[in-house]
Length: 330
Image (tube, rainbow, N blue to C red; front, side, top):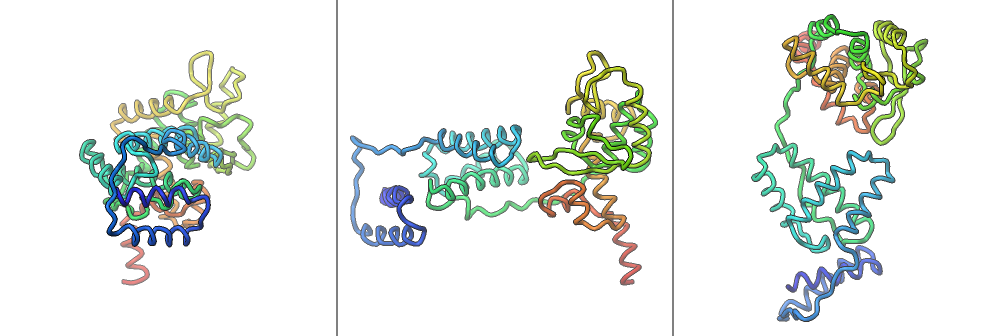
């Protein structure tokens, strides 16, 4: 009860005092109320100026202005809403222990990985840090919840043989062009389906894509992709501006799910495990690193804002490490 009163007072003084003054106020209150007995008066209870829903909406709007996609915003909102519902407290009263208990219970109830739990922690950290920056709370309760370590696994990439088998078994020019575009550019599947015919420069073998956060960047494709892409476009009879469209009329822009389903069916037919668009991206990153491409350039190629993200995609082949050891050390 006493701690809650001190917290309420410091929260209400946020607009008027800086951090140093607030900390000093907190110490003074703790010292003066140390031996004071306080009882709750249930007849009158102050309610916070803004409710949880209003604060969450303000946060989502701020993230939307920063350029987050609607898919990301939806994930943020559902994740934070779940926490607020389970803790059943006003945001200004949520403590570090509340969040630790929530994360522990969530992991237990859903049997999810440490990686998933750390994703939730990061979203909550972003939310409470924003609340702190906007002076809605004194200090983020997530500050003392550190990154959750998880075992790093080397994710699979496509072999040269698997890529060639997929190319040889494509039933139409469109699917062949899609595989070549994904394999040679390393673009995201969302970037692929968002491309228009006018975005492709065949002369310089490059195209402009819009990545996460509406960031624009050039990607590059090889000569084989150029030939297969031209063959596909020459075979089309529709006038849709999209680079890739459905095979059946009215030939609408292909969706992410359409690409995923098509690749999954091809992988099942050939007996290749885990065939999905993102695996092409990981394959390109890994091979670029293995062949000596500087990691900073791979980062630019993939459109990552942080180089740590690039390193997670690029798992260096252990055989190359062994050969390099023999060359430079052994």
